Image (cartoon, rainbow, N blue to C red; front, side, top):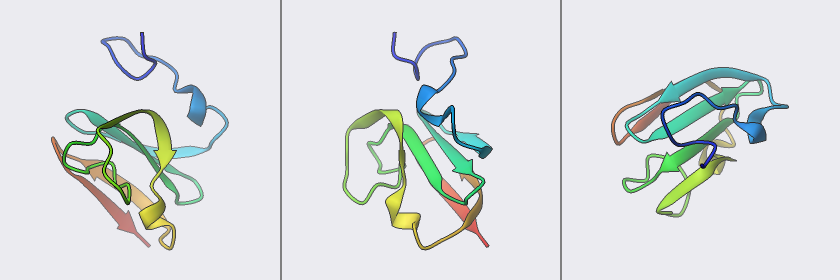
Length: 88
């Protein structure tokens, strides 16, 4: 099975060597804030809740949210089909 789907806890390999400060889980997507302030996201993206510059149907592996590059994010929140980032 995919590492990011299902009813069991799984280690997210692509974030294993990163210093993750915060995690937020939405309806079908997840956000991670690194110590550096960088945000990574993965999951379904029907409403562009992953924050990518271009729409994608879904992303099963975490990718950086590049539209926030100029911001140092402190924390994130996720709803059913939306995401919010709080920067410093």
